[in-house]
Length: 223
Image (tube, rainbow, N blue to C red; front, top):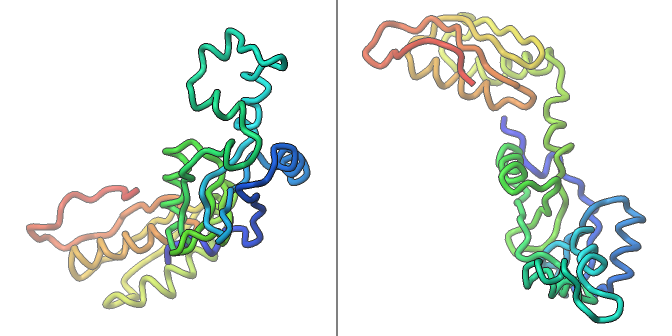
């Protein structure tokens, strides 16, 4: 039901080792047209990420003649350290923000949004790199057609509920409208919740006619 990271990630990630020199990193960034690389130790574990911004610190902060200028005096000590770095281990930002193959795409999206990053290294239980997931990969779950979404709800969500013929499912532009009469409030709410987590669903409009009961609650759109 829920999309997970391993379903959408790139499985041949490009990385650099901790001892990769400055010029090699710069060349690979240009070659692969990306803004950063995961940095790996000798065992393949992700120890950080090195980005264009990390490399730019050398030009922006370090004076060619060894004299620090006004900008250098204003930047944080860590940035000054990066300016003098010559390997990925010197330049990288650590620890890296990572996700796991079995994390939900929703979790990865929240991480990207909260940490303001465009891509995440995907690591296994031992911390080794197994993939890369990007904003584009996350948004790919919304590429499904309305018919594909409807058929999954009709075939996999509704049949698990009592009296499946009581329900109507309409999908337009990824927005699902559910109609019908569940036997109990909890059954209705379970249908709505499970439909919300079908790949490609943008929102669910709850139009179910709930039976009158103390826990019926108010009807309305479910997002």
